[in-house]
Figure: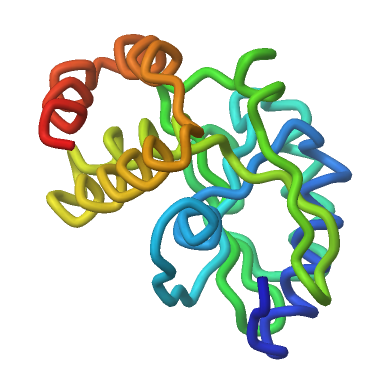
Length: 183
């Protein structure tokens, strides 16, 4: 995947930080979506990390705040924003979402030219995350989830069983069943 030069430095620095503190991370959001569905532009880089580990989060905030702007700068939130060279890096973990061994094993490792190797969420996990966020952000996230599902199914690269299991765990099963029935 080719990305604008202005993002490469920030992306590399963010990846180095994330890998140091959260090795079980996954790239999510539009950057990840673009590997599974028709590309869309984005202005930020989103990572799913285990923000429930407060000790690690405190170390991360202390280290990052000495070099970059981070908000909020206290513990206990489900989303953090780090600004690296003017680029917004989001670290998120929806409250009910569990980063399990199965989640970790389903990540995909890809290579982004000028950035390096990086893990992205599986199409199933990414679609579930969009389903979860659609509860607050609306129809646009449902469309993104449906695109990921549709194109992944067409490539024979989608486990409906795993997808529905994760949907049920996150109380969006009805929404996920509806998306599947319309594809």
